Image 1 (tube, rainbow, N blue to C red):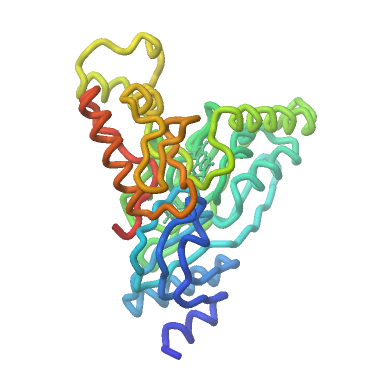
Image 2 (image 1 turned 135 degrees about the vertical axis):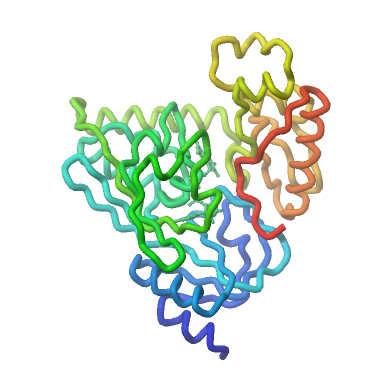
Length: 317
Ligand SMILES: Cc1cc2nc3c(=O)[nH]c(=O)nc-3n(C[C@H](O)[C@H](O)[C@H](O)COP(=O)(O)OP(=O)(O)OC[C@H]3O[C@@H](n4cnc5c(N)ncnc54)[C@H](O)[C@@H]3O)c2cc1C
């Protein structure tokens, strides 16, 4: 066995030549040479130190719910962060990056805290949610975070919310190599019973289930919604009437209005139910999804002169 494999085994469970398709909600992605699952944040730091010293390329994976991983082999290490620790201290929730967003939201509600109920409908880990400033139902990570602990080039740093530079589905972590280790959420004490809060959150999920495709592998929304400012800069014309007074133009509406619903490349399809979802009909490849994304972008550009940006993180293309 090689030295990297032998050392990695000290930090967590290692699999060789593991298909990424087993670890992504899109069920896509080729084999990776080393796939390590780490369920302890101290060990995560140790493995990051080791890979840094040895100059080995690595990719961080949370829940795999916002990635499009290429079909080709990756000759490095994928680190699946799986430390699920969540501590509630009065109105502060401290979650390790590998804790699922859903479980952190559920624990908050159970503790009688309000403000993070929206997380009950978001797949993936809280670390992934920080990186993408995930949000739903009017809330987002930016609205809840007080600070974040990160690994940056061999150092462990605490960053304030301002230092995270959150914006709509944006953060500083999309532009640097920081690894989110822990997250502090500051929530409010609720005057409602936790069972009432939970009921509301579950109603929200039921609503999403009526609008989003069910039963197909996907990565959630593919494209970012378009700000009014971007519309003015790129399109320059009147706002579509249905968006008057709104803060953003829905990417799903632009895709649908460009005639893309149901558009297919191989087994990848723009969902008939929600035009901002691409679904894997079964046996799709990442290249098919990638081609479909490009085709949709071109059609939207031809129709509206808007260049859509992807929300999903493309890896290995
Ligand atoms: C059915 C469905 C519905 C969805 N609904 C929503 C929604 O309502 N709102 C929303 O915002 N999103 C939604 N998403 C997208 C996705 O759930 C979120 O973006 C989620 O927060 C991603 O977390 P993850 O752990 O799965 O990230 P991953 O997919 O594992 O990773 C995404 C990116 O973040 C990086 N990353 C992951 N963890 C860390 C870390 N600890 N430190 C640094 N980088 C890291 C990865 O390297 C990768 O580049 C949906 C997805 C699906 C499949």
